[in-house]
Length: 197
Length: 102
Image 1 (cartoon, each protein chain N blue to C red):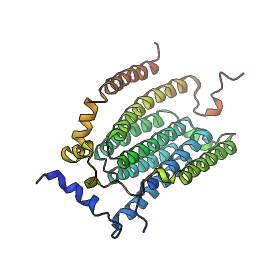
Image 2: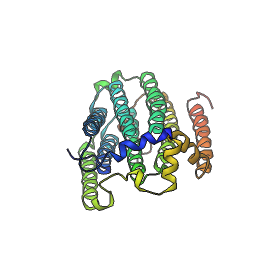
Image 3: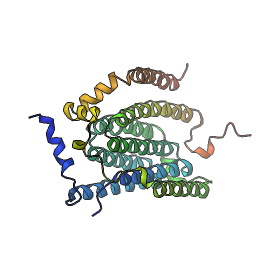
Image 4: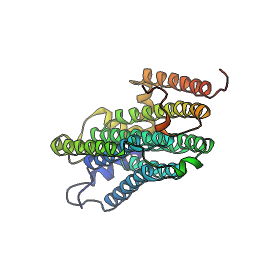
């Protein structure tokens, strides 16, 4: 039997009668952790505390990716985001003198307008979700019911293999452009911080 | 309990997006503004991966990987600009970055 077929079993178990109990618990825990971390990022006075709560948010989002059957994106998030980008942030926070900034006011002069704009944006999102409910199917498509060759290949090959096949197939050009973008970013960052160009 | 649908993930992503937008618009510290931009990019990634799961193919996840690559490049350059600016003006408040104001 195909060793990848065991990933079909959790999907076929999601009939309307028996809903798994662990999935909503983990979802609400991870979602609450992510949103609480996001609130702490924008509310805390100390920049190092904000960076640490952003790391908590990134780890919670990694858990949500794992719940969405995306292990490769979750691993890349840990490696690049929580391990690389947040390290860069912490280095820069410690290079830049924050003792004065910790005693200043937290929010700038325009904070009521910013808050109102954020609330208006959230109201727009909520109205989009309420009006467009029919566009998001209530049940994730069960893998065993479809005859899509891509989905069958996704089951047979595993996530990392399929991501590699996508990367070398339809997204080859974007992959090369992304490597060029990283080269330009490295050059830019080095030149930007030189004392004499 | 209600089974977890795509809409649940979209609501979480929308909440993270709005928190990032509020952080960009209201904070004075430039580093925290950059961290709020990272929140926005993570919300977009979560949206993409949720839709990729809904449709059943991996296009959303590949796009999410490219967004992570782009975020890394942008953070490197943005923090380089921040360090260069701090070296000149010795401040990290967005209120004091006003050399181009009329």
